[in-house]
Image 1 (tube, rainbow, N blue to C red):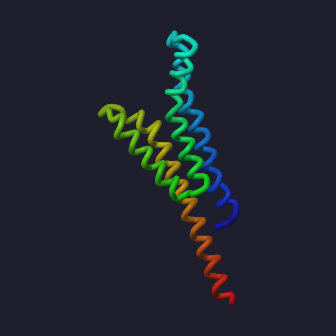
Image 2 (image 1 turned 120 degrees about the horizontal axis):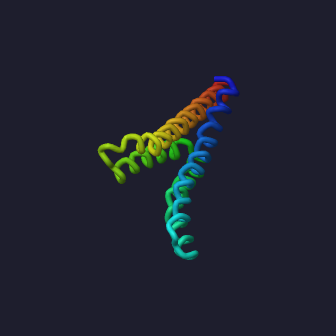
Length: 129
């Protein structure tokens, strides 16, 4: 696999992850329309940003350990479906869980490629002696 593809595979899930964090953070902005007092608004905003914090924690883990992060994103996608199950809500699952499944798959693929390259490097080192 050439270096350009490796770089694209490395950066794509990370950039998409940051964009998805921004996307889910937008849902927290509805607290400003509720007519809360200042401190109630701050509290509600913090509550609404908990999913973003969980997602960013998962992204930080995936950034370093692709395998763990990939599995974590897939589990978060499944968890979202289980917690918010609605028989007629497939569009919402596609919008929220779909990107989580995609990110998990991309991180797993990146981890697989890195492991394969490490195996080849170790293999070449052993037989070069």
